[in-house]
Length: 174
Image (cartoon, rainbow, N blue to C red; front, side, top):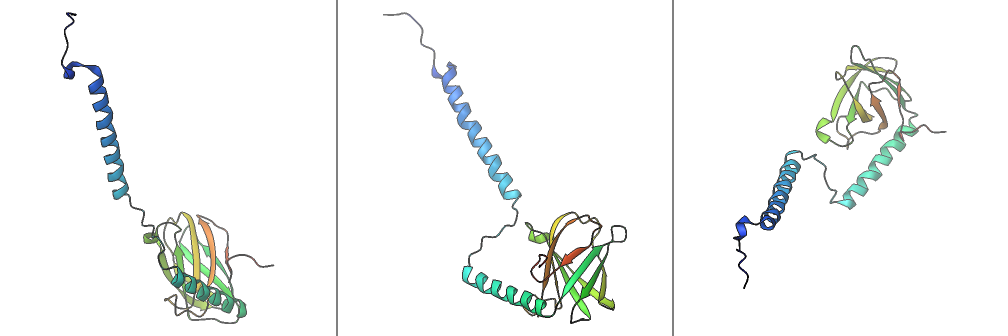
């Protein structure tokens, strides 16, 4: 028989090493769970595909109606005064236009502005200060999207001093 003393398990290295791995993985996974809950980005999963498909047809019809009315808008955002100026050309001139700034990933950042007709197809309103990043733009004659007869769309990255063109399909047509 050997006379080597046997040390208890709690004085050995390997049990503590294995327990340390276990506890560190619990701490890291709990940290990630808390972070994911606190930083929820608001993305929504589409569940009603049929209704969404019907809504796409309505949007296409509104863009087709804008095309029939020969509507095109040029929008500028003044970097000093934050004035939004829209020049609308085409066959109609409503008294008000509704401009929606849609942020691509966070719907709580979306904004809507009412543009007042001042003269000859020119509309103006006060815009937001320090607008940054990429936005989708929509102009229509009614506040409610389902009531509007037509819609012009485009996209822009702010800040910019360039004019932004909004068309029925969103892109320049040749």
